[in-house]
Image 1 (cartoon, one colour):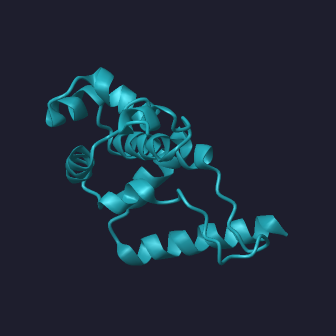
Image 2 (cartoon, one colour):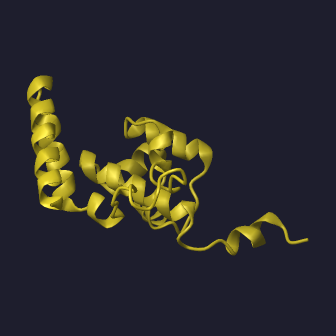
Image 3 (cartoon, helix red, strand yellow):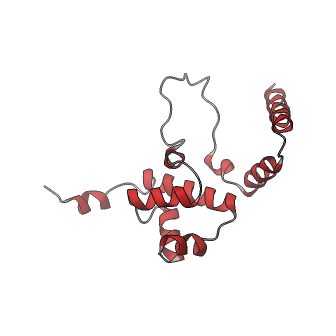
Length: 138
C-alpha cells in the first residue's frame, strides 16, 4: 500500500487545497494585507504564502486556524463554495463565478459597502442591488 505522501502527491491541483488557497488570497486582498505581512504573522516567508494561495502547498489545520484568526474570520470561510448543494435543482442553482467573486471590482465594492456604518442604509443599498440584479435577468 502506498504511503500517505504518495497518495497526497496524486491529488488533483484543483482540489480543496487550491480552493482554500484562493479563499486565503481573496480575504487577504480584501483586508489589504500583503503576503509578506501575513507570512510575518505566521512565521513563514511570503513565498510560502504564495504556495498556500496557489494550492501548491497544503495548509495544515493549525496554520489554517491561525490564518483565520489573523484575517478575523471563521475557519468555515475557507470551505465556503467548495461543494455544490445537491438539493437544489439545476434551474434554481445560483450562478457563481469564483473568478468574479475574487475580482478587484468585487473587493472594492465590498470594502465600500462595509464602510457604510449605518446598518439601515446598508440594507437599503443591498435591496437596491438585488432589485437591479433581478431586473437585469428579465
